[in-house]
Each structure stands twice: as C-alpha cells, then as structure tokens.
Length: 399
Image (cartoon, rainbow, N blue to C red):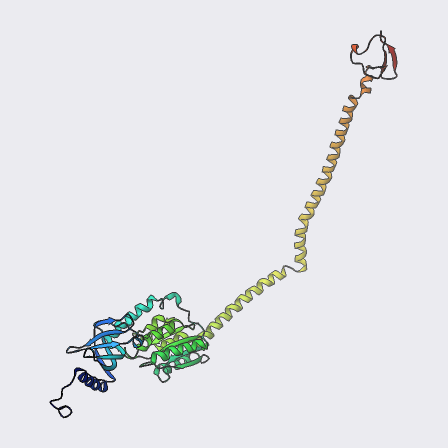
C-alpha cells in the first residue's frame, strides 16, 4: 500500500470510501456466508434487513423483496442460515453489508424446525385434510412413477410390478430427487401427468438418504402439486422411518418405494383367484335361479293349469249361483210384498168408497143447485131437494 500511496497522500473521506468499496465489491462479489440471524427487521415493502453473526463478529445483511419471495421459510432471530451474495459498501454511512441473493437453513436442527413450521402453515390451509384424500384404484392398468430414472427406487418398483402383474403399464416421469431444482422438476412431472391424464395412480418418491437429500419432497411447490393432483398420489420417500411433507399431502403414504408398488399393483394370481371365486358364485346363483324357474314353469303345464283354473273358477261359479238364487228369491219376495200391499190398499179404498157407505143404508141429500146438505139449517121450508140412496134417486120438498 505504501508503494501505491505515498506517505504524504491525503484522502478525502469519499475517496477513501470509494477505494474501499471498489476493493471489497470487486473481491467479494459472490461468496457464501454462514451465520446466525440477529436483529431481524422485515420491511413493509418486502425487503429483509438483519445481522449475520458468529462467536467473533457480525455483518449487516439485506435481502431484497424479489429474492425474499423465493424463500420457503420465515427467517427468525437465532436461526442458523447459509447465504450467498455480494459485499456492498454503503458510502453515506461508511459501513459495509452483504446483499443476499439466496438463503437456506443450515444444520439439521434448523431444517426440522422449518419443516415443522411449514407443515403447520400448509395444514392450516387444509392441504392435509383427510376429506380431500382420493381412493387408490384397486385395479390400475397404468401407473406413473415420478422419481430418478437412474435410482434404485425405480428398479425396485419395476421389478415388483413385473413380478406381481406384467399386464400393468408403467409410465416413468423422470425427475431430479435431490439438490437444486429437484422440487421444481418433481412438481412439473406431477402436473404433466395430470395435464395429459397419463395414468390412473402416481407414485412419487425416492430411495433413502439424509435429511437434506429428502428435502425436495418437503418443498412447498411439491406439496401443493400433490394436493392439487386429480390423479391419486402415493408418496414413497426414503425408508419407513423417513417422513416428508409429501406424505401428508398424498392420498396414501407408503413406507418405501417397494411398498408403494405392492400397494398400487394388484397381484395377478390374486386377481385370477378372485375371478374364479366370483365365477363359481355366479354359476351357483344362476343355477339356483334356473331351478326355481323350472319349478315355476312346471306349475304352468296343462294339467296344473286346469287344476289351478278350476280352483279359481269354482268359487266364482258358486258365488254366481248363490247370487242368482238370492236374486230370484228377492224378486219373488218383492212381488209378494207388492201384491199384498196392493190388496190391502184396495180393501181400504173400498171401505172408504161412498157407494159402500150408501149400501149400508145411508143416503146423500143435495139442494136443487147440487149443494150437499149437511145440516137442517142448510135448506128452507119449501125447498126442492134430491135424495140419493144406494140405488136410484128421490126428489122431495122440504116441509
């Protein structure tokens, strides 16, 4: 430095700061820094301001909104992170900071913490609800596998599928299963399978690995792709003790990729045995129905039909004969009753007839004008009257 700047050189603050900025920004343009978050201050505009520190030092850090939107976790004080970015000098204050382009959790403990936080957040959205789970088809003709095309998981699935049922078609949707970009390729393959309706069930997974290796299957983009899949999804990540967030979003979780193949690929021998049992049961039911139909048809032969017809006809004939007899008897009784009533009416009329009364010795007296005389005062002396006995007429003068 002595050779570059003579001892009597006098710098302005701006000149010195500019030299320092050129030196730092030109030297540390893309570095990876690991430290603990402190004094975390998210800005209303979306920028993140905080301090990265370790046991011996600290540095100011900023992550602008465009980069911060890509984070799949919420930074907190005390969280250990690994950041990639560039050193920048802020001349007005004379301090330097790191502008972060990428940030991720550092250490397994923090990974578990962020996964738990993500799990709670996605569960609150309903992505893991049991009522959204779709049933896995019992007899799938075509299955899709989203995994590494070179991994042992794919070989195991293909071997088990061929052994259990060679008639099942397999569609391989190759994807990265660890490292940068893995989550995006997994989600894209799930979407592709749905867009083109490529299979009846999807197996999404990989073989065993470290916690970091399995992280792509816990990324939010993969969880959302599984939850929105119209094709039923079986999650098969790692070994039985391994868990990923894809297990919660999937319609079924398999402990291993091999177990997933066992679940979705029906065993051909089991299918044939089931078909044989159904065929036997079907034959038995048909035979029973045929025997019942034979008995029914037998009851309709000529002899049986005549007997059945007679058994139906005879009661009706008896009822008809009884009705005819009752009708004739009723008519006769009605005639007798009517005749008796008529005779009685004739007798009553005859007894009330004026002629009958006259025959008893009575007579009817009328005036000359024809008025019936009922009292002596009805006529005057000298009046002409007409007396009608039972037979003939008598004319007289009242004295």
